[in-house]
Every structure is written in structure tokens, then in C-alpha cells.
Length: 338
Image (tube, rainbow, N blue to C red; front, side):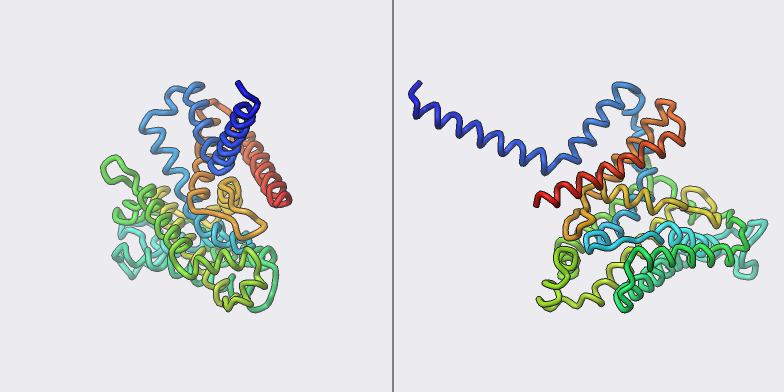
């Protein structure tokens, strides 16, 4: 083999290695998910049973839907610590309007049974309004999102306790419970999750609003110079996230059959974790719906697999916390290199 041929061969091999590395970097989160599924299926063969896989998807749906809204927020370089409290308040209001006539402790005894569309709209309205308030406070007072949403966490949880006097709201109508049921073998929460993911993907990738979200997170000053209305778009981002929390609240209530004032405590951390693990950067301007979905599935597979392996729930929280820290550290290192 001539020297020239050797050089060309080496260049070709380097080019292949470079393409492979780019491919791995692009799909590293999906590769991690596949690897986890393979490991869990080896350790526990029943992991791959259709019923268990649907169980993983259903369990992932609530914080997965929340993570869709949080994806927009984190891409825009924000954060929302009030997500769990907003889910609780939206769910409580919806459940109080969706109780069966036979409920022993009916919240509105004179209303009778309302059509299921009423509690659905109520949850979306409550979530949307509270999200809009979050966005307005952040946009028009320049309060850091961390502080604004931390305050909203306490406010929303306080209203939840006052609304219910600390009591759970239960005995929902069969139509309401159908939100947490199945259509054939397909769980309704998974179907709702898929629809919300598609809507969010279209919003981020095929609308001016989506482009503005990335622009604000990438460089807020450059976005403003380019004519992006920063304040108006921030309000829209948080309002949309609030609507996603309302949808998550409906799925929660439909699955559990009741909502208590302490519902969804800590869910915001799981949803933020799913978004972060999925590659949405806290430095802003980077993130995808697909990544958020994979992040939620990674957490779902992890929790389900550890449960099947008999790992205590407390240790599961420790493992999840470590994964969050590692994901953020890797994100910071990646952005530092850039």
C-alpha cells in the first residue's frame, strides 16, 4: 500500500469516527434509554411485558405533560417551581366540579352532576390563569423566575387548602374517571400525553412563537433588537405551561379518583428533571419536545425498574437526585465548551 493510499485511508477512518461521534452526541439520550431498557429486561424479564410497558408510559404521563410546559420555560432561560402546586389547585377545582351525585361529601351539593367538559375547562382555566400571573410578574416586574414561582408555590398551595379546608375531594363521575382509563388496551393518559406532545412540538417548531421562545433563551438582548416582544412572549410561555399543568391535573384526578390538598408535591422537580435529562439547557436556547419525552421515559423506566428490583422508594429518590445533578453538570460542561 502506497503512502498516499495510507493517508487517504486514515482520513476516511477519521471522517467515519467523526460522523459516529456526532451521531452518538445527537442521540445520546435515546441511546441511554435503550440501554436502560435492555438492562432492566435482562434483570427482570417481566419488565418487557405489554402491561408493564403501558404502566411505565402511564406513570410517566403526568410529569411528562408537565415537562412539556417546562420545556418552553427552560428554553427561554426560566424556571417554574410552582408547577406541582398549580397541578394541585387545578385538580382540586376540577374534581370539585366533577363529583358524582352519590358523593358523601359533595363540594357543591346543589349543582348535581355536571358534564365532564365543565371540570375539564375549569382545570385548563385555573392552570392558564395562574401561569399567566407567573409570566406577568416575571415579565413586568423583572423578579427572577425562581423567586416569582417560589412565591406562587406557597400562594397556590394556600388557596388549595382554603378551598378544601384541608379535605380531599373524591367520588368523581364515571366520565371524569374515564380520563384515567383505557380505550381498548391504550391508556387514555398516554393518548392525552401524545396529543399534548404533538401540539407542543408544532408550537415550538412551526410557529413564530416557537422561534421567539428559542430567541429569548439564546440571547434576550439580540431577540429584543430583532423586534421580539419579550414581555408578551414570556407571559404566553408561562400561560401555556399553566395550561399543561391543568391537563396534568385532569390526568392525575382521573387516574387516582380523588385529589387531596397535598397532591403533586414535588412533581415540579420530577418534571424539571425529565426536561433537563432530555437535553433542555438551563443556559437557555436549547431543548426539544422529543428530548423531554425521552427524559420522562428514562425516569419512568428507572422508577419502574428499581421497584421491580425491590429497591426502597427512599433510595429511588436518592438515585433520581443524583441523576438530576449529573444531568445539570454535563449540560454546564457542554455549554462551557461551546
